[in-house]
Length: 387
Ligand code: MN
Image (cartoon, helix red, strand yellow):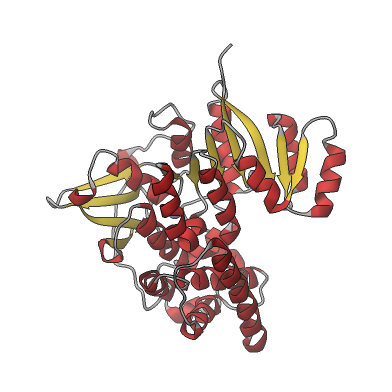
């Protein structure tokens, strides 16, 4: 009998989670799913549980957990809430935990997986944005490594695997520029939710699609790269590359550059997390170089997409600033998705919250989550008053 490798997928009903299961279908002779988790999508979670037969499923909501328990009676164990997430990522002998959760909610499960010694495939960039310092200390003390699933960081990770830190001159994170790349700041004012969700290149969840439209996604990724690769902010540049064929680049000290290329399909970085350090056949389409008309590169316009500027500032100031940046962004994006505020107000409110914040440093996980909660509350108050 072949011993299957074991995986836990956090956020299995979301975009990263569903694509992870698709990758597992491709690698089905090698992997078994031990746990699947969802926020509120109970129907899809039930379907997935019946198809993949995990030992555990976790749902965040108490009432839904009762319902799910009835539905899956005798099939698998139903756990609930953050405790449930921490329990399943801490199970013994897990070969890969995919963290596909959205937002700051991903931090504690990331930490629990590392503490349990389970390899973490990280798609939840907010874990690093708000908890990078703590996570890096934990990695250093346990000798572990995170496998980045975010496509840009995945590209960098792959390029760097054969080089030492001193050889790196710059990390160049590519950005598609999102659906509003060529809009003026004025034109941005009245864009609809539907327009903002229509990402030209990548198939992603709602929150990250809005983040891409404001370019906050790239801002968060700059902070994520800072911590993942221990690289100072002045050595991380953003390059707008609308074709999204190059997933990121490294410039070395000899002025050579190495790029990682492929079609824009998240199953590529996801599968690489499952097969690392090997590469295996994938369902991902071949990149046909001859069908590409051209590859273009632009400097980002940080006066138009101020999210990028705010993220660099918050990242450089460090401590609690990235926590405030992220929490204010999560609340503002949610309000925009509910059509309560206009597009440009997302970044305006983040700017206000950052200006108002008195930084704190040497934060514990509980400190971080307390600042996260305070900022959410404050952001809602500001939005209620102004918008
Ligand atoms: Mn990305």
